[in-house]
Length: 124
Image (tube, rainbow, N blue to C red):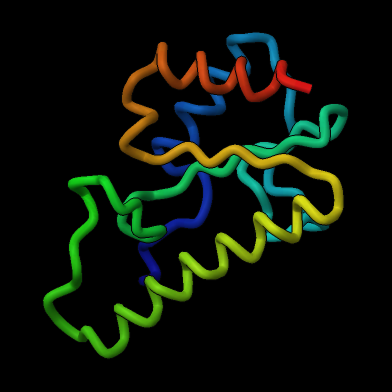
């Protein structure tokens, strides 16, 4: 677990490079927002989360698998991650922020990711 980083992972860095290249400026991991979003666009009141498919249990993804060992520990932990994601999305919405979740498997397509980011940030 000590080797599992919570920020600056490859998918997050890819999204940051794409957003910056598109001319968007952002803040990183603001502590005053629920769950410290990966990218924060304060002027737009919007945030982007970049979720790992395994850790956040992206259901249609082939990267999601159930752990084979220590299931009593891992299954509740992964389930709680999903519940926490929903709770934090609701909390952000309540305080007037909109959130976009980009999944690790989706970020591999640069054009699709750029399109989703632009569509999300330009929509009122």
